[in-house]
Length: 240
Image (tube, rainbow, N blue to C red):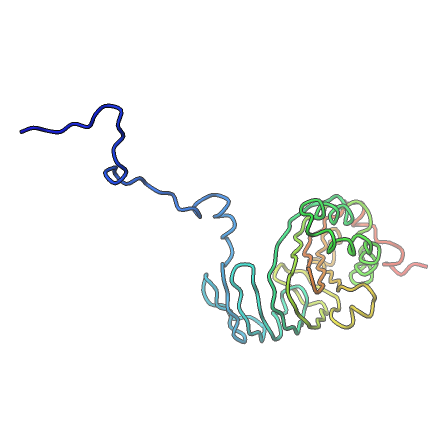
């Protein structure tokens, strides 16, 4: 029987080649890291349904999130760091992570991370001293000196309205958050709301800071040096 041989140097046609193992584009370390949280969720009153299952939360919220787009209306989970939050939003979001050796340095590093954030971060840089005062008045800790700041800035592109008040309720990380948002925050002429909290009242070197505005939000954890955290300012202690 005569067997036809392929001339040397001629490649085998693609349709005759055995199938190759194809790696899914999402099966990469970076992609897997980004998929740690739920990829979508739907809120129906106190029920929150996401790609990981169903949870019951202290909220009355109706909305949905798919990827970076989010729309919702109602009273949010009190453990979200802003206490009782009444809101109605429809927005897309972009998260920027940064660190810094002070609060001002943290905001500047966020600006350096992505040029689109400059116009949104500039007001925070300009009002760093006001934010420090708000934290001091809320939890009695001065974060104006050197400290380690690690956080995420979420840029929000959309529309929304609402109000929030936190009176010491613990958030998901165990910090008792204090602050006021919405119209009361606008009355402070800052244009954003400042929430601060301590996980342990006896450990004033561990502070959580949340900032909320119409076009962005900030969630940061602040670690103060031992000598700074243990020594409260005279204003915080009530000394003359």
